[in-house]
Structures are given as C-alpha cells and as structure tokens.
Amino acid sequence: MRTIDLQQFTDDARLNRFHWAVLFWCALMIIFDGYDLAVVGVALPSIMADMHVAPTRAGMMVSSALFGMMFGNLLFGSLAGKIGRRRTIAICLAFFSVLTAASGFTHEALTFGICRFIAGLGMGGVMPGVVAQMTEYAPRRVRSTMVTLMFSGYSIGGAAAALLGKAIIESHGWPSVFIAAGLPILLIPCVLKWLPDSMPYLLQSGNVERLRDVLGKIDPSHVPRADDRYATDDGATGEHRATFSQLFTHGRALSTVMFWIACFMCLFMVYALSSWLVKLMAGSGYSLGSALSFMLVLNIGALVGAIGGGWLADHFHIKYVLVGMYVTAAVSIALLGFQLPEAALLFVVGVAGAATIGNQIVTIAYAGQFYPMTVRATGVGIALGVGRLGAITAPVFIGALVGIALPLRQDFFAIAIPACVAALAISLINHSRSAASRAAVPDAQAGAMTPQPGRAH
Image (tube, rainbow, N blue to C red; front, side, top):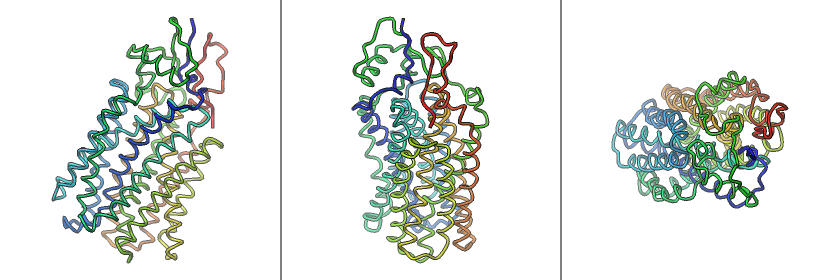
C-alpha cells in the first residue's frame, strides 16, 4: 500500500498548464470581486449628489456591502467544506453579480444599502474559497507568488472600475458602472466545468476517481495504483472535517488572534482609502476626473505591491516582509495629508496602494500558508470575517471625520495608525506553528509517509 500526502504531492509538482488554469479562474473571480468592491468608491460623489445624502449616511451605505461581506466570509468559508469550493464560488459569483447590477436601479439610500448587503454576501464568500484553492494547488516554491498574482486581480478590478467610471459616469450617470457588473454571471457554467474542487473535499466525499484525475493533471507522470491511500497535511485520510476549534490547537491560538487583528487593521485602511480617497481629494480642490486618477493610481500601486510582495515572500521570510509593508503603509498614508506637488502626491498614493491593498493580499496569502489544508478555508474565511469589522467601521468612521470637517492631515493620520497596530500583530505571530514551517521537521515516528505541507518562508 502506498500513502500519498496530497499537500506534499502539490508542493513538489512542476508548474504546468493545470496550475495556470487554476490561477486564471481564481484571478478572474477576484477581478470581478475587486470591481464590485471598488465601484462604490468610484461613484460615491455622484451617488451622494443624486440621493442627497450626508457623508455619515454615505459611509453607512458603503458599509452595508462590507457588513454583508463579513457574513459571507463566515458563511461560505464553512459551506465550502460541505458542498465543495467550486459550487460555493459559483454561488458567490451569482450573488454579487446580480445584486451589484440591481444596485444601479435603486433611487434611494435604503434600497441601495439592502442590495449592497446581499451583494456583499457573495463578495465576502468568494475570497476564502479562491485563496484556499490557489494555496492548495500552487507548487511550494512559487506559492506566495501565485497567490498574490491571483489576488492582484482585486487591483485590476479596482482599476477597471476607476477607468470605466472616468469614461461613463459623467455621460451616462453612476448607475451605468453598477449595471455593467452583472455580466460575469454568464461565466458560471464555465466555473462549474473547469475549476477543480479541493482535494480534501474529494477525499471526504469519497470521489476517489476524480481525485486521481486531479493528481494526474498536477503531475502528468503520476501513475495511480488501486491500493493508493491518501492523506492531507494534518494526517486526515477522509474522515476528518474542519472545525472552528482547530484554529486554536497545536499552538495556533495566539497567531490566530494576531491574524484577526492584522486583517481588521488592514481592511480598515483598504476601505477607508477605497471609499473616501476620491471624495477627500475632490474636497481638497481636485476635479472629479483628477480625483478618479488618484483611485486609478492607488489600484495600480496595489497591483505592484501584491506581485512584488508575493515575490519577496517567496524569497525572504513572509512575516518580516509583511511587517516592512505595514510600516511603509503608515508612512505613505500619513504623507497624503501634507501639501505635495501633484507628481509626488501621485507617487505617494501609489506607494499607499502597494502597502495597503497589496498588503492585504500578502496577509491573506500568509494566513493560507499558516493553516493546514483541512482547516485552511475556515481559517482564512474567519480571519477575513473578523477583518470585515474593520472594513465596516472605516467608511462610517472616516465619513464622520469628513462630516465634522477636520483638517485633511488628521483624516489621513486616522487611516495610518492602524498600520502600526497591524505591524505589531504580525510580528507576534508564531511562525514555527505554521503548516509551512512544520513541513521542514520530519516526524520520526510516522510510518511510510509523514504529512509535510510546505516549507517555511
């Protein structure tokens, strides 16, 4: 009898067409998700003028989607273990595509908020699924790079929202950018056909033939045997399912809480900037077109930060890469409150995007590597769910600051402080308890095969 450790199998695989296909479909989901997340910030000045809402209420309208995302993270992260990631991702795509488009047909704040809340369920639900999927299937030596490449779709979606907003909001009105978000629903049959399910789910559901087919795509030279036995990276062989309590076992309790704090602070910064940057810059004297350019540069910077952060995480210690990125975020956001030449300001906005939105992506990649396969979607989903509290708080809090007309410098200082807290939280994570780190330590008492989920970064 031969025991195949599924995570070790993918760890050691050579990068091939199958891995690029998984990256393509996961990144596409994130691009759509990123567009739907950013479109409110792009259209916010026009929405406020059209619906005659004050800054504080506008912040609550933005937060309605983020509140839905918190529930989506928690609900769909757990549901994926029961019905499979592929079906869960397709359901989430349907939720946020249809309801974001529906938001464009609303005419008052309450209905808009309800549509955004339901859309948020899908937006929040898709993230833990694709993070866990890409982390599971990416070869170990390029795992951080591929996860961050996938998540850079968030920045592409945000940039697409800014570009489309610049092109059509003034001529066709703000609803046009929301209605365009309904098109991705046409891709659901393709997702169900071509996106593979997770290996632990196939193992737990007894679908061994499909699991063997997936292994053959990961490594075309693999020849299955009738008596093959399969194990996940925590030793499960099919009877084991993820539970919330596993996030706190094996010395993971403190680190789990630190991931929650880091996600809260990071998402606070991301949604404070995504929701209010255009409005803050417009209020400082820039035209709507120029203010939208800042949003575009923010997302371009995020793309660079995500890819660059992933590359650094694959070549250096991911924990210390993150600490450095959070410190950079604090400095760059604080600088936005000072009078700078426009070229210098654009550069600082790009750095802020790289070190906030890009940082969120690397943080989630780290969380995906920290937890073993069977609890990965749950761990990432709950960390994102807790982080959504920061996302929900940010638009309302910054909206209140805008409402009392504080100096611009103080608004940006309020966004920069959470970066310092997040840097401290990441520094306290016990990396030696991560799945990646533990892979390097062979278990002398194991039998023919010891689970070895990945290397430490």
